[in-house]
Length: 294
Image (cartoon, rainbow, N blue to C red):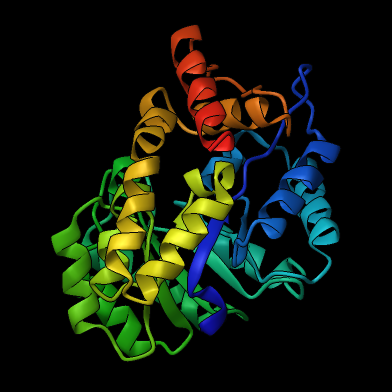
């Protein structure tokens, strides 16, 4: 899947101050990504606050992004649940013609065994009309999808084409890279260790910080893929503080402050999330000013 190599971004859902979906802001954000070198867009991931969107709002977000993108970049759709049947039902009923792949998170809250995780994705792989990117994010799911489970799925199902690996464990990522099938992609789901993963043989990133600094972060990944190590690390260290800051008080509160600073959208998030406090907001705005004035 060459179209999934490089930098993807997990798009936010911008809200107006009255908490309704801000369609015009979403269009601006999509164009900002495309104009600044992002390689593909991820729709309705965690960063989109998908858990708080109604069915109608999800449709509105999808429609807005598809229309704004207008076929320019590959689109990946988040289709995940801790209810396997729910994923199956969505895959069987949704029109997926605008999408290149689906991103499906390992089941959260239920804490399945490795065999349960395998059976969940086996069932999905048997019905999915699109290639599947597995998503391992133990900090949110409360269970770690082990490399042995990932590799079992990758070897048994040709439509399991990649993993977004967000355990924050470079050794686990290297185990996957070392043992994966030839064309299987190991994609970073952790902005801070994206560059080390790419240099170790990873395929790129599905990023949050890249939304705020798409030109710089996508260039870092391109340099990393071309093994231009010193140049890539210069950008990594330039942006490293902002990566820590955007996750300091929860995602996407941090990245939405950056968008507010850039004039792309309001910083509104929906409960149970809350806005970044004044101290963090000020630090993020100062960082944005520093980068934009360089």
